[in-house]
Image 1: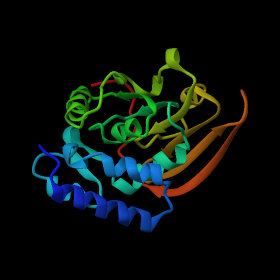
Image 2: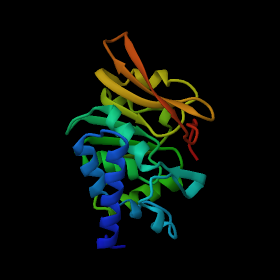
Image 3: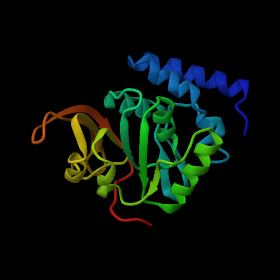
Image 4: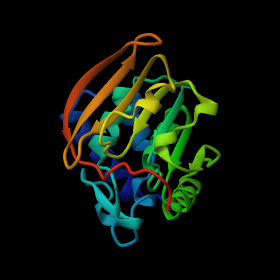
Length: 213
């Protein structure tokens, strides 16, 4: 599917809407204007791709609303070339934003159907797929740690302690924590043994689950 002038215009309008809601850094807005979100939504829902709302995707999961994607990305406070671990690839949209920002990303998805979907979507959008991994997000990727940032795109029942140990010193984990409604937490690693936690309000995500399927 091509990126039409109408879709580019809709995307520009969405970026203006996001900029009016929060003072997102310009590089994040630029990345979101660059990535064609309509390539990541389900067929038949393309007309909703540039509304600021979540949408259903395969395997009874969702693509996060653009504001949430922008906020989680913003809270990472990463820079170009930083190494970032994403938990919950989903359809690949959040990964595309991180790639558009120039981060070195690794993204884990536990549902095989979504892992394959994300690969197809990222290729269609002009991105590589080398960092996509099928596996259990709770395990992380200790062989590739430490990470400058860890972004968890699903609702964790508790702060994943094992993943905290994969953060670099001064690195940040952005994780929604809770059962039905979550609190968006940013956890910064101060040193080997100390962490600082900040709360950025209420969000709603699909649950973070163990194992693969």
